Amino acid sequence: MRKFNFSAGPSMLPLKVLERVQAGLIDYDGTGMSVMEMSHRSKPYEAINAEAESLLRKLMAIPDNYDVIFVQGGGSTQFEAVPLNLAHNSTCTKGDYIVTGNFANKAYKEALKYGDMRLVASSKEDGYTYIPATTRSDFREDADYVHICYNNTIYGTRYTCPPDTGDVPLVADMSSIILSQKVDVSKFGVIYAGAQKNVGPAGVTIVIVRKDLEDKASPLCPTMLKWKTQIDAKSLYNTPPCFSIYVAMEVFRYLDEIGGVDAIQKINEEKAAMLYDYIDSSKLYSNPVKKEFRSMMNVPFFTPSPELDAKFIAESADYGIVSIKGHKLAGGMRASIYNAMPVEGVKALIEFMKKFEKENA
Ligand SMILES: *Cc1c(COP(=O)(O)O)cnc(C)c1O
Image (cartoon, rainbow, N blue to C red):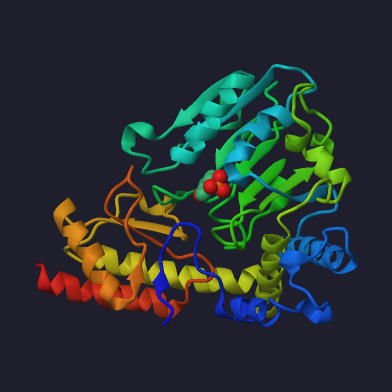
């Protein structure tokens, strides 16, 4: 029996998608082979690659002045790719960072190696429980970019709208929020996201780059980290993670069939509201995040003691609720309720939480 997998990533995929992948696993679309075995230079794979891009463009309403590439290395590799690509062709990039959690901090730390980086704002002092407010004047006018993490997977916060950075390009790590809600791509210079939260299996990372930012790499930028390399090659410069891209394409098809991002956003809002409403009404559980910044994707919650948290995690497993343990930096529990977590999964979690509250009041 399938479990309700609340993992922060890799995470659940829609059952329909898994079934379609299974149906084509040995003989994909009459080719007599699996996508896993297929040349990335073959016609059927080229069709998969093209459809993945065009569906993503449609789902996110990506304007024509942006390129979309599928690369390897995970979200983490983009922490370095960003300063190396947005270097105004120099070896000293100027980047402004807002640090709202662990991944945002990792991105900042990585960038420090590549030039003149500035920490503009951070919510670290308050345990990353909110998104710091900024105005245009907080950023250096001559910065190459401003970097943010749009949804903070570990602490469960998110931006409600992109910060105003004036003419400075805004770069956003959207690994744990992409395709879960509408975003206006035109507000961003670069968007990147590892796939294993909302898109597909690990192994592929989406990078969306505004065309005027494509030719600014440092002369030291490795060929494989340079966005332009894959842009010019339509993500086929070297062997791509073909199977991950194929599964992502099936996820995009499925999302398109059920009504696109608007439709999934409604369901996500419903799931998150149910869970937060219950947490707020309960005497046992709490969520430390300032309400306006609560993530729709990652919901951390705590009982009054680490011992009781451990008991919750152990006992919930008997009800098909798995990977609900919080990140080691945050402790407690964390329910990651990405696109593929069904409403029934959230209902089952709340039912268990109620039962556990009664027994441990
Ligand atoms: C998971 C995650 C990452 C790291 O992704 P990898 O693919 O493991 O490198 C980076 N940023 C955010 C916001 C994430 O949630």
